[in-house]
Amino acid sequence: MNTRLFKFSPWWLTGFTQADGSFIILIKKQPQGKFLYRFVPTFELSQGIHDLELMQALHTYAFGGVGRLVINRDRVSIVVTSVKEIVTVVLPHFEKYPLMGGKFVSYLIFRKVVLAINDNHHLTAKGFLDILNLCYFMNNTSTRNPESLKLILDTIKSSSPEFSSVYNEATNSNTLMLDFSQKMNTSITLEYLAGLIDGDGSFGFNFSTTTSRITSFFQVTPARLRRAANDDYIVLIALMEYFGCGEVKKYTNKDACVFRIHSYKNLLEKIQPLLLSIHLNTVKQLYVEPTLKAWEIITKNRVKSNADLEEIVNLVYNMNRGGLKRKVDKVTFLSIILKLVR
Image 1 (cartoon, rainbow, N blue to C red):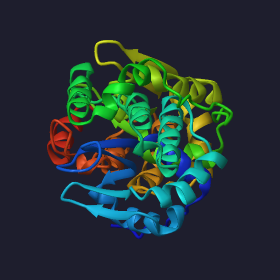
Image 2: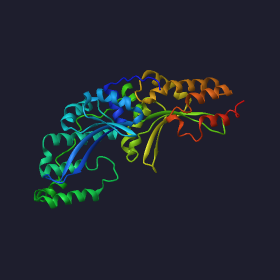
Image 3: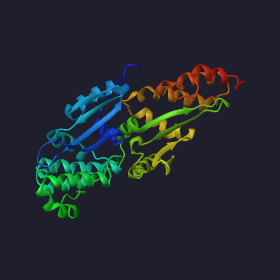
Image 4: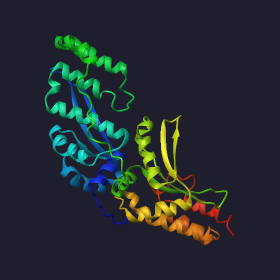
């Protein structure tokens, strides 16, 4: 594997968080304690294990090395759960370099809860219920629903007379209102875009075993937001406006959305200059050179010879994930397709 160079910046970190970061308030049951449940604010950045080297370097850079690096078989994550570290290091970053769309709203809820906990608001029955009602549905998960919330509330009420006296008041009047004085990011910088592409972007090629025609694409798909596509639709619209081309497509049956450019004219005029002007930190940085070379061959020569086709296949056929998602392996594909080009 080629030696990789990492270049981090604050706006890149925000773009990367926009794609692969999470703001979560875990609610953990405990056998004893005043309210039987406790809140665990958690900021997390995750990537596939193939980017372990990147995440190790990022852990040192991001927020001064706070939190811990969590490694398992398939994923590697930077996880920050210390309220003190979140208040002093994580929150100030996103105040200065804000997020966009639904991720921005999740951050606002996260910030409000963390600051309330830091002020010991969670140690009173009213404060605990305010926090619970504010954050319970901030993330789309299959385990959080009105029934599971009622179960938590019933458990707390049955164990604490203090909760029973404030339950109706706290349910109907939450004093933890979101503060929108911090403005959402509405301008896209190159470094933010690099971080976003490192997380949710992709550029690739489609091959057919029945024709020598090759199609290519650049797209940004907020993968983890498939259950809340509307929340980050605004981000993809901003991308389309930034590039002045492409399309944003919503899949209502999947609750998903994607921004895509597939015209070779736009790929060369918009995306090629972009890829030459930014630095990607994930394994995608290794895909830039072969992608640009393949685009050059396709647009100049129109793939009129076996040599052109074979060169393109060798450049990009196994580029993404070693070609594991292809229907046939590279050798088999070449044996079939080269017969079609004369």
